[in-house]
Image (cartoon, rainbow, N blue to C red; front, side):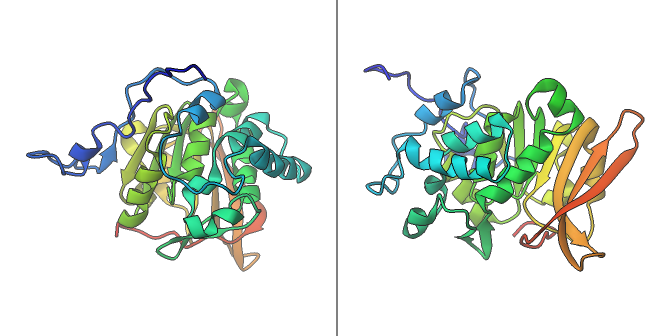
Amino acid sequence: MSAAPPRPSRFPLGLDRVHGRASGAARSPAGEVLRPQAPLQHAAQAAAQQATGRHQPSGLGMDSAAVRQRMVQRLRADGVRVEAVLQAFATVERHRFVDSALAIQAYEDTALPIGLSQTISKPSVVARMLSLLFEGQNARAAGHLGRVLEIGTGCGYQAALLALVGRSVVSIERLRGLYDKAVENLAGQGLRDLRLIYGDGRLGHAPRAPFDSIVAAAGGEDLPEAWLEQLAVGGRLVAPMHDARRGGQGLLVIDRHGDGQLQRQWLDAVHFVPLKSGAA
């Protein structure tokens, strides 16, 4: 890195105005955080280099790329083969998205609490879901996930990964406390075209639809119709849903074909927090 690196773009754009802290400023009706007006960062490492300057846990070797590479090696050994996904995991610093008391566990393959009875999912589960998205028709053709909709921002870790493997990302969080935490965690990371929405994820986000890739981080009894309506032709949806045959949650994968038909398949048994309506 040169002695005088360019000043990183501010994320999110106009944050004080969005949150109504500036004098006379009004909150966006949708609670939307706009992306920074900055050149696209095509290299994942370029995005990582801008994620500096904030107080974060250190001194435990977590800032070393070697620590993340060991996690990536475990993911590869577990069968993850999509290089773009592995590169994203090697780039995004997971310890920056968890409480400092849990940072020492950040690169273990375990779910960790992030507050409000929510968790950050195991790296292996996140990698599996992102890899499945890459098998969608549009993603295979483009080599990236295209326009992405994430339901359940949580602490923002998966949104950061998605920003490196997608063309644009809309991420929705219904819990205000987690939404605010994700905004803080993602600040200054220089991620391209990433929008955070505070609202009801079951409604999706029609203004930016259709989406090539839709992924949910919460499991419901039913699949919201809005998600299907907002799935692009050639797009793929991956979400944990209740599987009556198993009596628990499973990963539901849905592809929309060129004739508009939807193809569904059930895969791995999983356990995610419940999918709920409304904002809180």
